[in-house]
Image 1 (cartoon, rainbow, N blue to C red):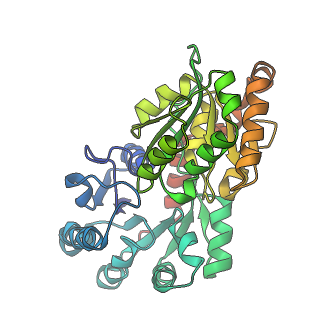
Image 2: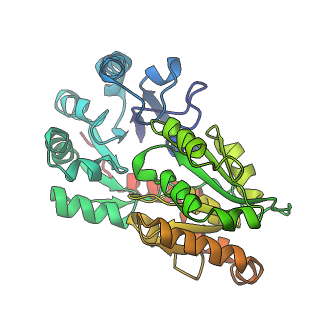
Length: 360
């Protein structure tokens, strides 16, 4: 089978943290199939683009470059593939129905999470996404949460395939854990980094008396707000804000971290939480979305009420004050996420594609 992976953003030198899981899937499928192509928006090769940092002009430019990037593949090369495997239900998904009609090529649409955002207001993006999903030959979801959302909000069935974490990077290493608490993720509202600072603001004494510094590795639209909060709330002695990390750097961070905070207000799956557990960290995460599918409260991590910084702080204090006993109890917690490995994800993908007829 000949597969063309189509995605909007992709890891590049300018944007090394973008959609790393798509790169992992692409490289994994190249080992399994003779011909696996890749097309992505070249905007991300030329310009740095933090999540949520765009404006009207940059959004228009991204769209123009997206179309320009895809046209050579779609007009001349797409006909040589059996399947287009799109990662991005709206972009680049909206471009693919024309190819289905022109060449009879099949479309497998992988839904990661944007469709859930669009479903909340039922606006134009929702209607366009529903059109793409309706025209898709097959729909793939990255979690049971997203699968249910697709069926309830859009009315379509889907197959679950986990994106998978890289077991060659994220595993328990025999190194000293010198970092007490960290967060790694985009500086956007739904990722909840602001909740960490609110929790610290209300409980400064706890952090100061215990000599704890919370390290935030982040980039995105609200990073300047986070920096301003650290300054205005006098948190600089207990909070350090760093640049976003590549997957290699992230694996190194997790290998040295005791507690990883994952305070998302909304999360389709949350691969970063899986990577942290696989690395032997104790994860404190919001009880939302796909996170609940792999974190069992008190068994391999801790869950707090989404958006509730007081509950988050309570969990932080509980874990910190009882770290040794919890660490002993969780010593095999990394095994609880083995089913989410990249190898399993690739095998699921291969099994799925093997069920698709290549007849046109």
